[in-house]
Length: 87
Image (cartoon, rainbow, N blue to C red):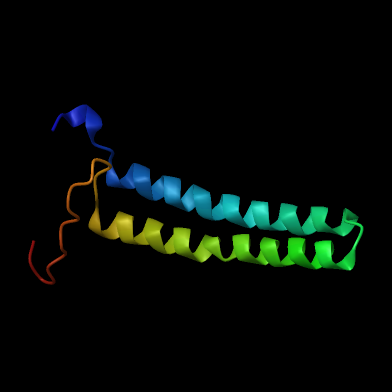
């Protein structure tokens, strides 16, 4: 496997962290645009979808933290286990 196909763990962690904030922004955007819908059913659906998108943020933040702590590669290599007390 070449070095060019690997992504640094910090880079992938940063991407997940950015996706978390993008999810929050998308959730607020979906909720804000829901106010212009005609029927109450459409408005309720759009608000529920906004909440659903907002629930992605914690998942992305947890993934970012996991990747920052353990490290991984983009090419699908195994995540090395962290041994407590062993350097």
